[in-house]
Image 1 (cartoon, rainbow, N blue to C red):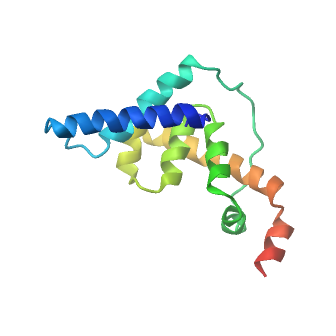
Image 2: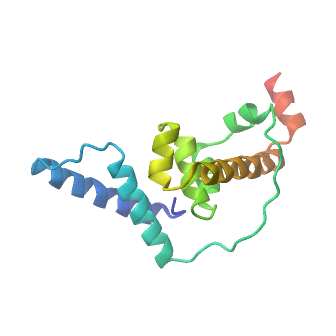
Length: 147
């Protein structure tokens, strides 16, 4: 979410330290989303203190049948960098969506968005991601390498 591995590591360590202290005192929350929520708030706070990305319109493409082939060529860091460049709340929506760990209700609770807002952010982000995939791994190249 931050686009800065050093800041992300600091926040992760702080969250784990706090969780360990709460566990030692028998005060772990019952809500499994609380640590994710805490991480999101800390990342948003760190992002607000740093430079913000300039808002620009990105090209969007329809989700293509070659997307799984294109995505398979990505290193995990490439997807993380691409998501971290999105403005928040889209960055949060995409990060939670691509983690593929949460159901719809949990996504809404964590992102603090309404259903229509979340759907719009994820849908637009996926179409922007498809445009980037198409530029990075052209369809013809993706299908040739699949065969």
